[in-house]
Length: 43
Image 1 (spheres, rainbow, N blue to C red):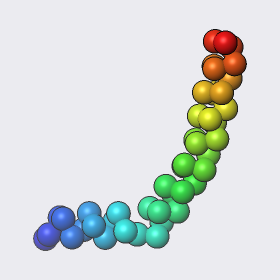
Image 2 (image 1 turned 90 degrees about the vertical axis):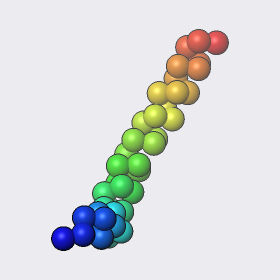
Image 3 (image 1 turned 180 degrees about the vertical axis):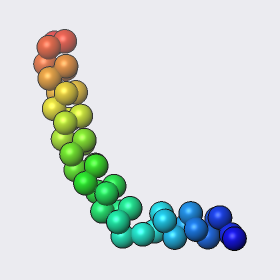
Image 4 (image 1 turned 45 degrees about the horizontal axis):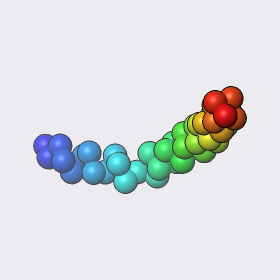
């Protein structure tokens, strides 16, 4: 069994990309809000 082929199939799976997009869509705005609020507090 070729594990590199299986890992490649998993990474390029549509569910992996969908989950990655969802995770970035949730965490990126939260990180931006946190960073901007810390910069406002620090100044």
